[in-house]
Amino acid sequence: MVMKRPMVAFLTQLLLAIRSQFTRRALEAENLLLRQRLVVLRRKSSTRVRLRNMDRLLLVWLYRLYPSLLDAIIIIQPETVIRWHRRGFRAYWRWKSRQVGGRPRIDSEMRALIRQMSHENPLWDALRIHGELLMLGFEVAESTVGRYMAHRRRPPSQGWKTFLRNHAATSRVCGASRLPTVIGTKRTGR
Image (cartoon, rainbow, N blue to C red):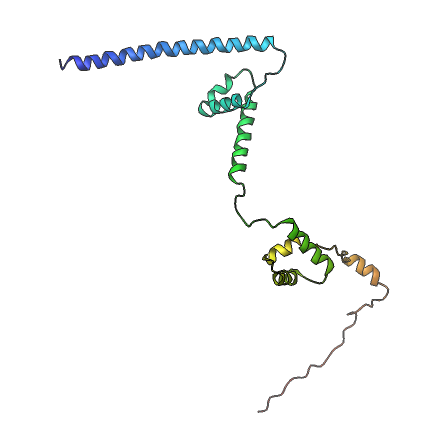
């Protein structure tokens, strides 16, 4: 009896190995048949194949699990599957790095009030407007006031070339001659 158990286990393993060989060959034959079917269908149809998002997702996951299947895909180009994969990767990281927290946004009325105060009082800075808003009872940060203030355009300052052209007639040449000077020295009493 003890002898039969290892023998039964061995025979079971042997039969499973033989069966897996047949099922693997049957699976390979089925795959070959399906590929040939796709070739025939592709020849028949002159229009482009329309894929749904689930089809794309399935093809991308199959590519992720078995990269060697990329050559077996007949209905689309292998570069297309790789492009879909990259697009999914970008979408995932865009979703992952989205901004979920931070300060709450202030309402549009507060922004309009800050902008109006900065327009009507051009000499006030963010600190002054912030103080006025606090006296009126509005709780808002000074940096927020600075962000929503109306920024006035100042005329650009002139460059060196323009400065020299404007003042060339009135400027004198300085430093052409050297004047010796006597520097007095302090005497210390000895």
